[in-house]
Amino acid sequence: MIEGSLDTQSEYLLRELSPQVLGAVIRRFRDFAAAEDAVQEALLAAAMQWPLEGVPDNPRAWLIQVASRRMIDHVRSELSRRQRETDAAMQSEQSAPAADVAQETDHDDTLMLLFMCCHPALTPSSAIALTLRAVGGLTTVEIANAFLVPEATMAQRISRAKQSIKASGVPFRSPTNHERAQRLRAVLHVLYLIFNEGYISSVGPQLQRLELSREAIRLTRAVHSLLPHDGEVAGLLALMLLTDARRTARTGPDGELIPLTKQDRTLWDQKEISEGISLITSALSKGSIGEYQLQAAIAAVHDEAARAEDTDWPQILALYELLKRMSDNPMVMLNHAIAAAMVRGPFAGLDLLTALDADGRLAGHHRLDAVRAHLLELAGDRQAAMAHYQTAAGRTTSLPERNYLMTQAARLRESTTSPAGDDSTR
Amino acid sequence: MKYILLMAAPKAGFETYRAWSEKDVKAHFAILQGINKELSESGEFVITEGLAWPDQAKVVRGRKDGAPMTDGVFPESKEFLAGYWIIDVESPERAYEIAARISEAPGPDGAALNMPIEVRQIMNGKRDEQP
Image 1 (cartoon, chains in turn blue, brown):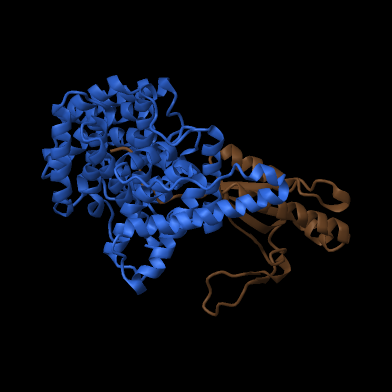
Image 2 (tube, rainbow over the protein chains, first blue to last red):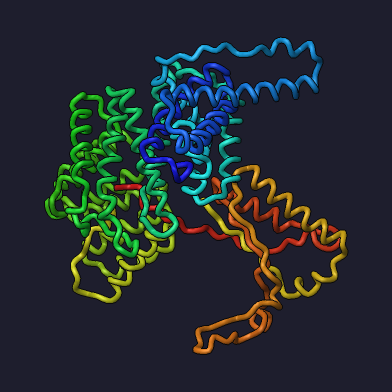
């Protein structure tokens, strides 16, 4: 992770310990922003020293000690700065902090850190960066590389995020019961965004971004082990696993997108699929159904089909109908239209798209055009399908997506007899 | 989301550039440096580059000998690319706001140049989010 010489096992250990160490240091010094910096320094020190000196007997205590020393240095320099600036008498109140390092609150710490890092006052990009560093134990350089920005820019983004949290006055404790559900939703949303950041084609310099989807799975797994009875946490973890299972099959040798119907399903990761299915089955049996669980259930139906033509579309349609009742998301309406087309024919899907046009929230969104193109092609109107593929290509901001859509339009222009394929690429 | 801000300068502007006073040149660079510093501090900066002047440019097209077809871009262009910024921002509006400030960088006698800044979104490598 940090230094090339650190072995994978130690790297993993460091990342696992990172939120525990941070929690302990925050409790001791009561300063999230400074503690976060100190722990980052301790992780860097470990990455440099452990390969030479060996992993200490108690790595957690070692990290807490190193981070605490950094904190004491920080407190001292703050004190001397204030001493220079203000009356010396004021200074005696800034006593050294108590050295209580609790062991048994590690697990709560990880959750509390996630609640802080996914604070509603932060923009998504800040929350993502801070979560990856404070909870994921990634270095600023690694996060900067993942988002293709300079290290200094990422360092500023993290530092500003911490300032925002400080300014919001949120104490380092669990949210109250009535805000808890909403805050947990925010946490799950940030984890979902991290997963999607990493869930891209493995082309060129962006190859390393694949790590982000693994990181999102690791963090969601940690939340699931802390809240094993929360159906939505289980649902999100299942959704990630069931989607990640198709990763290798989604992209061709030149980085081109391969739609779900054309994927080589023998490349799907059966271990991830069976774990995802068992998670979602158990979550759904508990009764409290949520959006992530339904999305996971839909992904599971796709994953269970050995061939594209075996896909149980009526079941997917039923699940989208449930999801539509829970969610006002126009993307859900769009996917519902695809499922309706697969069950009742393309015109049923196109009718639903007309309703989406009236809704207006997806106006100008490439995906509305891409789905319309696909359904028009199924309906046999190749000219109109081609035009909508072209419009969609002009509107997307994703390069692999644009290449895919341009290829679809070109295919329609050149051929008049080839059978239609599913546009759904995932 | 990442944007590239392309600073185009008219050919006429380039020719008068060499006649700017020291004070005007310094004021111009100070403003641009200040914008760069602010972008760094706000966590939005990715890269900025200034390009060599267009009389150093060559235009090349695929030919067997690889020899440039023209010296400079002037014979073919009314304006030239002076430099660019890549920024990583939360919204297109923020990209326009930064572009407007760059556009207003001062020229001779401190008057805003109001250079045209072309704002283009950079394509990402992401897949569609929906199943």
